[in-house]
Image (cartoon, rainbow, N blue to C red; front, side):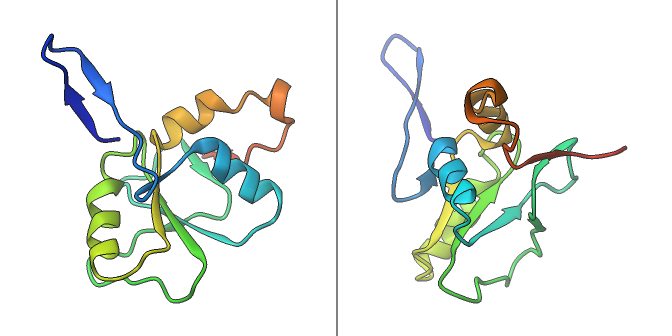
Length: 124
């Protein structure tokens, strides 16, 4: 989530459509059964994840097909440099989950969207 400070020092969070995907758009694609490759870039798995997510394999990893790839972490900040690097290498289908799992969970109230939010909790 790119952030900058206004002259009065208040932070402004800016959504970059070419780099990020909103929690709502990702949820709709998952709900429709669209093929999205979900990659968790956190060095240590957290309590919360997305159903079907893969672990980031590190430097040298490249998307293998034309499916959209969505990188995520807790708040989106770890995933941004990875996605930028891959986009610069020509992988235009790569995005970052805007706000990470934190915003995704906050945004998708099961009372509004239904029980299936594609969030999974670890059993630890």
